[in-house]
Image (cartoon, rainbow, N blue to C red; front, side):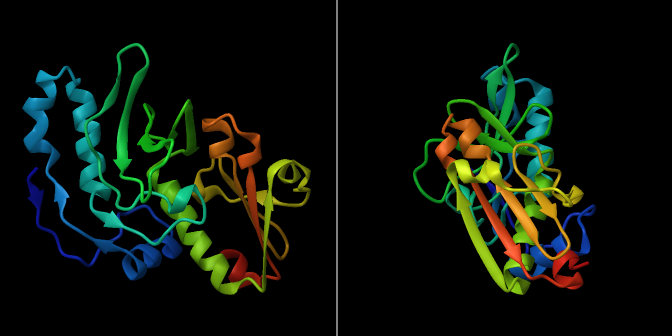
Length: 220
């Protein structure tokens, strides 16, 4: 497939927090991406609606070819953000592949019918309201790891026992199945996507970043 030539130095899309903008531009890299617009006629012949091709092209224009550091869950996340042929039907809705997995997995990373970023295995699990939310979560992970004095990993049923009283949900990650929570001196990331997408409660996981100061809590 044809690929468009772009600078390897990424420019963060507008709309991200300063934290995420720094993360994309300092820790990310842009690689050549396929030109979806050139595939439009072939995809239409395969029965893909024009509106879904336009969605894929818009994703590719904004995020295509962006390689980010590994995620702390989901086997490190997609290797490179990269759209491909939409999958689905008029009845079920349409999903757009968001990038190849780094290893062989039982699910793929997808953009949902409403623009959500999530995983699709035996069922659909929208992790964040948008791809921006996924990138914000990666940026917050990088920040929290750098400044936390303690990092605690909790798995399985114990995740449901976490006391979130006094915590507020972090809005910029646009959490759906996955959420981030900010307390007085700690951040908590809750990863429920695999538990939902694979109907596997044992896959619940939470990461608690403790002993954070004001900068560590926000990093703006």
